[in-house]
Length: 234
Image (tube, rainbow, N blue to C red; front, side, top):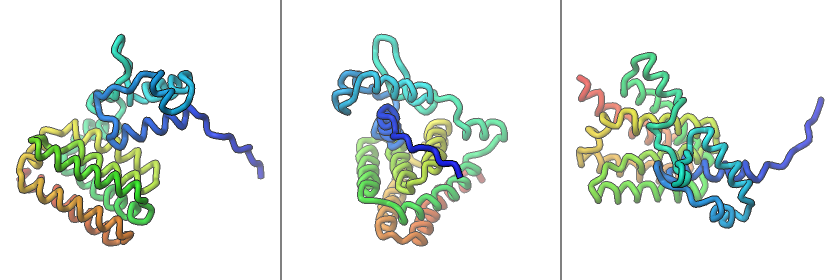
C-alpha cells in the first residue's frame, strides 16, 4: 500500500468554499455585489492575494463576474453557461413534468438524509428561508428565490456534496428557465398557503430525525406541485 502525505487545505480554497456556499444557499443573491477585495480580506483575516485567487476560481466556474469599473457580482442563474439540466432539457424536448418527476427522487432522498444528518445550523437556514418566503409573498412578490433557498438548505443538510451540486444546477434551471410556468402555480394565493404549510411540516419532521416520515412528507409536497402541473397540462 502506498500512502500519500496529507496536505493542509489552502486558505484560498477555504475562502472559495465559504463564498460558494453563501451563493448556493442564497445568502449572496444573483446580481448582488461582493464587497471589495480589501474589505473582504480584512473581514476574513487573510491576504488580498488569497481573496483574489478564490474569486478568480469562482469567476471561472461562472458563479461570479467582474464588471469593469464596478466590481464583482454574483451571476444570475439564467446567464450561467454549462448547466447540464439545460442541455438535457433542450436535447430531449423534456417538459416541466419530466423535471418534477426527477425532482421527486432527488428531494425525497434529500429530506431523508437531512433528517439523519441535519444540525441546528441547517434548521436555522430552513426556518430563515420560510420566513423570507412569507415576507416576499406579503410584499406581493412570488417567493421563488426563498423557496429555492429552502430546498437548497435541505440539500446542504444531507452533508453530501454531490447532492448539493445536483440540486444547485436543478434549481438554477427550475426557477429561471421555466419561471413563466411556475408563475401560474405561485400566483394563486391558495397554492402559496399550502406550500408554506408544507415547508413548515417538512422542517418539523426533519428536526424530529425521522427519516421515513421526512421522505413521505417531501413526497407529498412534490406531489402537490406535480399534480398541479398535470392538471393544467390536460
